[in-house]
Image 1 (tube, helix red, strand yellow):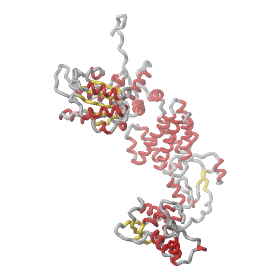
Image 2 (image 1 turned 45 degrees about the vertical axis):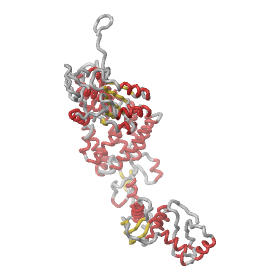
Image 3 (image 1 turned 180 degrees about the vertical axis):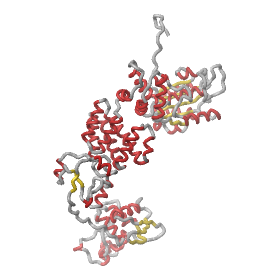
Image 4 (image 1 turned 90 degrees about the vertical axis):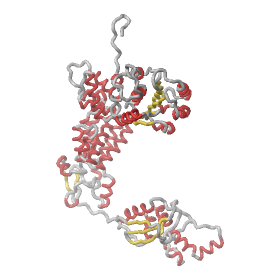
Amino acid sequence: MTDPTGESAAPAYQVLARKYRPQNFDDLIGHEAMVRTLRNAFATGRIAHAWVLTGVRGVGKTTTARILARALNYVGPEGEDHGPSIDMPVEGAHCRAIAESRHPDVLEMDAASRTGVNDIRELIEGMRYAPVEARYKVYIIDEVHMLSTAAFNALLKTLEEPPAHVKFIFATTEIRKLPVTVLSRCQRFDLRRLDEARLAEHLGRIAEKEGGAVAPEGLAMIARAAEGSVRDALSMLDQALLHHAGEAGGDAIEADAIRDMLGLADRTLVWDLLKAALSGDAAPAMEIFRTQYDAGAEPSSILRDLLEATHLAARVKAAGPAAASHGAAGEADADRAIEVADGLSMNALTRAWSLLMKGLSEAQAAPDPAAAAEVALIRLAYAADLPTPDEALRALKRGGGDARGADAPTPAGGSIARDARTPGSAAAAQSSPRAPRAFGGGHGGAEAAAADPAPMAVLPPEPAPATSAPAPRFERFSDVARHAAEQRDLKFKAELETFIHLVSFEPGKIEIRLKDDAPDGLAGRLHQRLKEWTGEAWIVSVNAQADGEETIRDARLAAVMADPIVKRAFELFPDAEIMAIHDAPPETRSETPALADQEGYIDDPDRDEGEM
């Protein structure tokens, strides 16, 4: 190339994402399953007429489409033609033109800008003619989900039975937006995200080819920030190499430079921040957050890093220390994850995840993301001292006690250990500064005690709480229905009375038959309620073959209908209906024998109240 003066001009710079775009199937990384399927199809001659490639941005959909178009039309450089071939050891006669999107028989269409039915009709019109140079006419439609409904309908018939010389390759990031009628006519390939370790290795090789070097931790940062997109990763690497260009010395680009360039949080500080927040230390947590924010880290990036650290610690807690080595976690991350997991319960980690997720969504929507992130950290720090639901329930069952954690060690004598700086009164506890608890209060009591040298005062035993009400005892099935009414669970009471035929009853075991129209899960709810009310696990069995007794509703209705007063009322008003039955107050209850033994009321199970 020469400039107007006749001197040679330097070639235009090509970004790494274009320079290192794969040119054949051997260059593709991370898509081995797709390549194996296509290789077998080409080898056996079972080549489809349409493919759809789906995946997130930058995973190689358009690149794969061009390589596939080259394979369909591959002809050796000397003109030797052995048919379509996946193996392209050297550049063929049509390869360069296809790769540069200028081949007359390989048409690329951007559906994002050409969405209408007229564009598709023009494309279909051209399909009638044979290829000019190549073996097949190949139509590559990028972002195909952007086509209009009319355009899809116009394409369907041709897509199902295209001419023998026509092939379709569709690419989309929104596979769910494609009509099923289109998907059923195509072979689908899902191009997966590239895992971080493999992507970092790929970036390292390209950096060496470009005469640069990046520290392994820096490559891992780029791979993590790219979220599996090779194009995004190469763009960041290009920026990193330019960021370091011209500096004295040939040293590798350090992780700090990559972190500053991408606006990421310091990984070490992320773990310190998480540990401070989960320990209940709000002030140090906010200080660490401000240090990261002032260094250029985005609030949402900090929260995402905290979520990633929490996820890694939860994996270690669930699957053991070996889980820390999976994924892109480095050795330092693995050690810190094991440390956090050893010091916390799974309930605390899952609660931290939920709070951080809420904080991230708030930070992304807030006018001041930094303020929203700080509030999220404060919320997380103050939630560290709250009991989880199961811990609170166990504390209540013990009669009050210390509800801050079921696993927290209790001093001998049953007294509650408190911070010596905090008096026993509630007012003093509210006005005094918040005392940070030792990290890992949920587990590892010895380590927690050693980590927190704050003096502890053991108060005298507090008065025993008032005795809670004894668990109810059920001698008859009607006792269960009556207790449901006492608990204000009127709908459940009505279901018990309306849909259950009692087969047998004894304390701890009930056998029933359900009506055909009984609501789903009624037997399971009965088992759960009995366990909640009595504290014991009852056996509730369903016997569909037994007849059982009349339902409580039917039995009471029969008793009411046998009452002389009710009979006389129906004689006077033959079209009347009984909508509900209520008990009279004890002091005014009727002495009619038919009604004397009836209790409660019956009503429509879908209504909470009824009127007679």
